[in-house]
Image 1 (cartoon, rainbow, N blue to C red):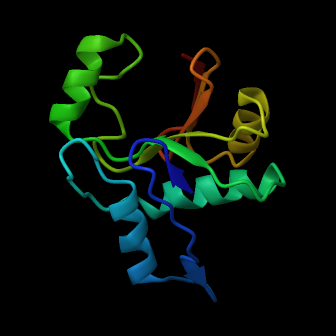
Image 2 (cartoon, helix red, strand yellow):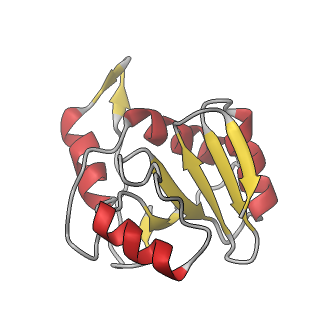
Length: 143
C-alpha cells in the first residue's frame, strides 16, 4: 500500500496460521495514521481483512493507494467543514475505515469486490475515484 499523502509505502504480512501478527498490525496502524496530526490509533483488523480480501478479488499486484485511514476527531471536523461527504460519526475516527484506489481498476470493480466480502460498508466515490471500505454495518452508498 502507498500513502497518497506522505508517499510512504508498506508491504507486510499481517496474518499467519490463523493468527494476527501484532507487530505487523501495529505497523499498518502507524502507516494508516492521521498524517495531519501524526496521530496513531489501532486499525481494526476486520477493516484490514476486508481490504486484503477485496484486493485479492480484483486480481492485481498493484498496491492500494490510500487516501485516508484513521482520522482524529479534529481532522474529521476540519474535513467535514469542507465537504458534505464527510460523516460526523465517521468510522475513520475509530480506526475502522479506509479510502482506497487502484489505478488499474475502476471504482465499480473495486467496490464490487469489497461488497462481495459482505463484511461492512462500501462507499463509491466516482468523481474522486476512490472506494471507502469499513467494518461497520453492511451497507453501500454513492458519495
